Image (tube, rainbow, N blue to C red):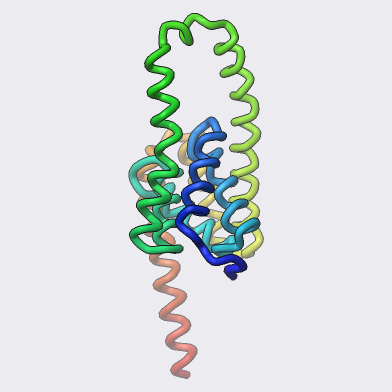
Length: 192
């Protein structure tokens, strides 16, 4: 899959740039990470990147940081994980430091308020793209269980206000049971 050899500097600069120039949290950063590392650099397969994103979302903490740690570790071990988490965390820390120094001026600025309101529309569009991409990957596999879990999880959280933690645990258990049953069926078919 890899067309270019992963390098620590390229990894750091890539995650730093993505983190520095995206607003709206992990769901905005994730498609940019997928595009950069799967499509442009071709360091990981798109399916593998989607798996890292799913794990990053399920783990405690910010999805962008979790995903960058997994990506860095996958590419270059512990050094890669440390470099990628540093590159992902530095831009928000720098911005928050500057904003906190000039908080009173920012709080009263009509320009800053207008800019933040305009960014909301862009963030909503990027999040819609993430949902579309993730859902498309699930539907392309043409398996009933993942589609049913996706629809059930959405309805449970949106319509019935079920805790996301419970939904994640239920989906994890269902996925584990599905994998276990498919492995057992595969073992019995091989023995016959």
